[in-house]
Amino acid sequence: EDQVTQSPEALRLQEGESSSLNCSYTVSGLRGLFWYRQDPGKGPEFLFTLYSAGEEKEKERLKATLTKKESFLHITAPKPEDSATYLCAVAHMDTGRRALTFGSGTRLQVQP
Amino acid sequence: DTGVSQNPRHKITKRGQNVTFRCDPISEHNRLYWYRQTLGQGPEFLTYFQNEAQLEKSRLLSDRFSAERPKGSFSTLEIQRTEQGDSAMYLCASSYQRGYLENEQFFGPGTRLTVL
Image (cartoon, rainbow over all chains, first blue to last red; front, side, top):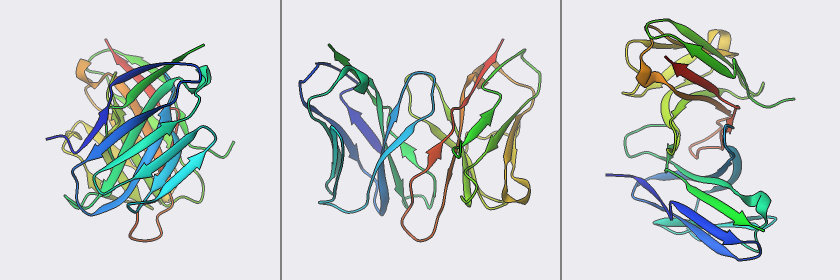
């Protein structure tokens, strides 16, 4: 059973068309939820860390929110340069592991 | 540049050969992680170090894989007797851990391994 599920798998938007990406998780003992952006052939680039339900973080056109079972990455008025894969990852204590468990990502394409 | 660096960026090898990758973390970070990523998937955890101690290894890390972090500085990941299934992007990340809550990890550019 997947512990971190991201939806949709792919999303195509027109420039300026706002939308949201979803990350749902089934782990307990959440010790952090992280959003990353990844461009093709590159390593993930850190965006946000969220720790508690109700917490929100914002950066330029991106806003991340967290509930007890999911997180959303809201993209307001996206631009073509926002095109990338957005990854969600959780740190948890289900298995005592310290490393991050990643979702498969949402591939975002913003067309001019 | 004070980010995480990895070398080489690309490696092409023949099946059965040994390969070694290097990762230089952000200097003040005490934790170093190795992940593997295949096309269309998120990174999968392989192993991590707290300073020089290797504290956790994934089931993905077979006996052919070994990692070291001498003196708690840079780290190497060696794959012996490579197989075509080892072809992937190998990512290194580092973080500074100071409490129960997990801090963000910063990733390097990765090493793309192709096994022929």
